[in-house]
Length: 229
Image (cartoon, rainbow, N blue to C red; front, side, top):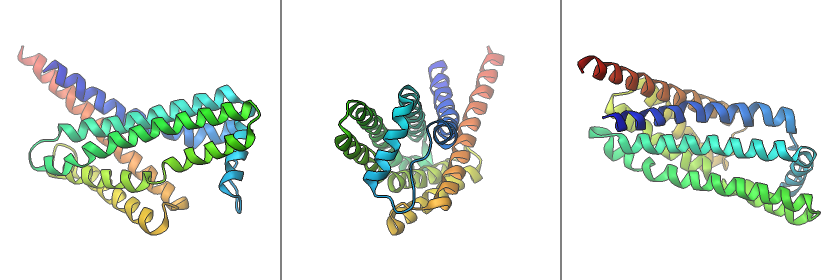
């Protein structure tokens, strides 16, 4: 019983801290401290080279932000995976699909940070063209992220709604935002712009809400078990 509670706690903390840290690091700190190299009319290589030039001015900070941001993303996907595999009953069939999707996305996140660090090392050694190419590859490694993240969220939200252990509006929020991510990925190549950013924020808030509910339920179960002993 205690092992199960610890596992649920870890799942809850991953779903709370993962999205929160991703937003803080990639949404706030990285643009403010490192800078934003993206611009209208720039090619992928020019964008990559611009970021590498900014990162070269603060190499330790750039690598730290990349590592922590990727770690937060991996934690989020780990939380989704453990949650999917813990769902029983009516939602189990729906949850089986995200149970396979999210570990694959975690592996892609690991590959992304590896390529980014290697690109920064090549740039520091003077291999500018090779570094830019590697950074482009790393940036496009997650080209299917929106599609598969959306599919995973869609099915996981449906599973949570069927299981009824989490407030229904959180499950529906994951389902709807997941569906929107799938549609934008298929028809707009994942280029959602400001709208896509808003959808990511809404999904992140729903994910944090799910994590908080898991932690609350775990705490209530722990208190109930303690009272019966």
